[in-house]
View 1 (tube, rainbow, N blue to C red):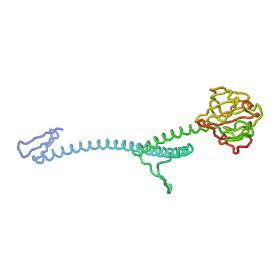
View 2: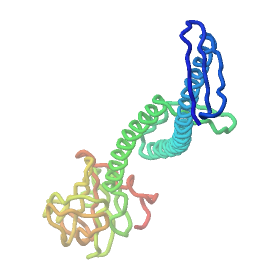
View 3: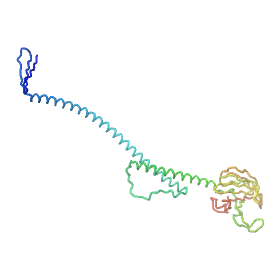
View 4: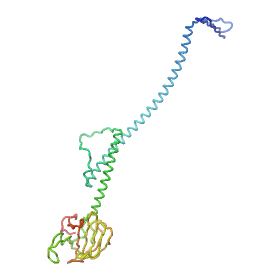
Length: 302
């Protein structure tokens, strides 16, 4: 098959001759410039349209992949946000519980001023949504810092209270009967009115005498009318004295726990019989020891 094209020289028309092969009849078409332009324009338009369609298809495929990726990332962020909301809500609940417990501990420690700064509220119980924002996180951090400071204050006060309890002469040094109370009395030797700085507790000779609170022995020895005696400092300005002992079991500087033995009941010094002179001093001033006993009744056996 042979093809032949002839383009006329006319400026307005072109002749196209088509010859399939040498012996076949040829075919001829006459085409105007306008028709040829339309054909060429149509072909060019089809080509451009094809390229645009291909580009759009490729672009849409890329966009769909990006949309899928963005949707997966958005779902992941949404899940993280829900988890963070849950964790923040749980943290707030634990923080509120810790604040309540701190307020109760503050009351025990004698720090009622640590009460919440928030006013009283009431109403139906509803689960409020947790707001995640910079302000909410800052508010939680501020509450945590305040709680930390309050816990430190409560801890210091509780430690001080425990030390005070440990230093308070709350037990009785021996079992026996109070034969001479604190304050003014008739002197057992002269019979005259005289001031008694402690209490006398009748007990058999050699009976162990217990220190009534945790403390440190400050001095021991012979102290005139007290005879053999032991002085124990407990802190907070509190000192206890144990007099008329027959034997001293401790030395100056020794630390004692409540209930340890300081000596044995005796009849040394200015005494009419075996007994213990027990004295409590606060800031150097003698006070009634029975006011510190947990048991009531100054004349009870102990």
